[in-house]
Amino acid sequence: MATPARQTLRQMERTETLAATDAGIARAADLLREGRLVAFPTETVYGLGGNAARDETVARIFEAKGRPRFNPLIAHVPDIAAAERIALFDPDARALASAFWPGPLTMVLPLRDGAAISPLVTAGHRTVAVRLPAHPVARALLAAFGGPVAAPSANPSGRVSPTRAEHVLAGLAGRIAAVVDGGACAVGVESTIVSLGDAPRLLRPGGVPVEVIEAALGRPVPPGGSELAPSAPGQLASHYAPGAAVRMGARGAETGEILVGFGPVRGDFTLSETGDLVEAAANLFHILREADALAGPDGRIAFAPVPDKGLGRAINDRLRRAAAPR
Image (cartoon, one colour):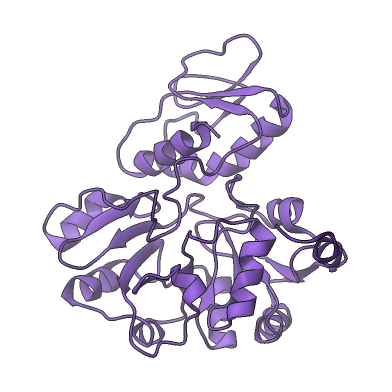
């Protein structure tokens, strides 16, 4: 836990809001080179970026988020060549990179010897989680910076992930140097994480449905990983949690609940009136924040059933973690 003096220093930091222009991206890249923390948009959620090669910078990411030290981070890169400088690719990794990069897929691969990656990024594992995002602002920033950027979601650890710049500021203003405002994120749930090695394993469902990954590889990708010793982000049982309690599978609100609908189930909010899973995923975290604010810290939020297929798997995964005991 930070000392009161360090907490005061963090609170005194002025967090800049940068436009997604050439000048704003250049300023953000300069801040990253200085070892400062910069939040930026990806197609999934806003990431909290720092130089992945610098131990002190990566430690500041953990400090700003209040993140458990044993939970690894994703290294974001501007292109496949940059990914291959830090990770070892096998034929499966090349096939998935060809099919889904740039995009919302993270691969956990063997760490290349001599890679310029702080051990805090990998949490001591000999593997590294790597992603090449599709968002043009993220790609421009990564190219301008010129190295891997460690970037978990830009929110206090365990809380609702941010899909807009104002969400970042609500949780981290005063703790980080800047946020690049690129508007709302299109996908709205984090990247899918797949571990590759002897056999592929799904570590976290996300923006790329596992069914299409299985089709690209030509074989099943069963669940894997451990919340006790996670090898990738998002494997803790309680995660993405609002202040209010969460109940899943609700077809109506109980007394005192805020109901979030889906499809035919109407509520105070709705993920998608038409039952569109893409729309629901994009709306999930924003609505979770709004419902949490309406419910209050002692309130309850009920979510209508969402089909457990395609992006629905990612939505339900996030909701189960939000609903887990904490």
